[in-house]
Length: 214
Image 1: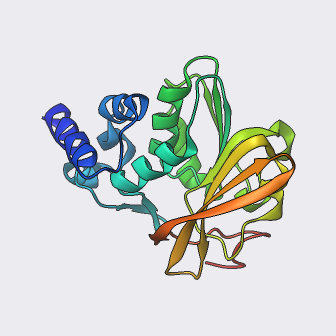
Image 2 (image 1 turned 135 degrees about the horizontal axis):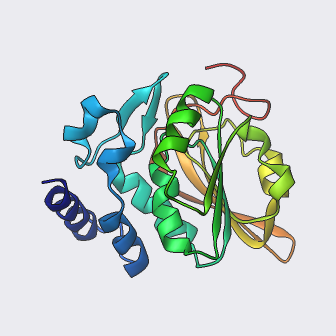
């Protein structure tokens, strides 16, 4: 039942132009989104909409996951930092693209959510979940080939830019609490360029370099 719904969702994302890269398509076909949402939400797992996961947090809509992963241009073997683990679905999709030689470090502010994510990701050998203030990045494993946030900041946190490798990409929603722009930042030749991928709405990134409170 879930497999057919997942395939139908991926067909929708392809037709709508949200995804096109074969590795992204394959990852979203293979990762079971229903296992990364609360049990009472599983029947909605393959609807193209965000879902609540508790603590006023959400799992992003599949089309937004697709947009983000496509624009990050992830390659096998890269080291990735995710800010805002949620229940781990986004990390699982990226893990499937990275292969065994790549690695995802993902930071979650809520310890209760992080514990659930760790359980759901236990079969993924290339993902580590860490409870911390994601607005400060994760300096101990920097630099990263790609950094992305599943929560919105008022400005791009400086530590994330500092922890990005040369030729790296950083993707983050930036703006007000209830309406943002999805910004893709690239670092090349020690210069920073930014591109606005369009409007979006994410929960706030709370922390030292984010919003001060939820």
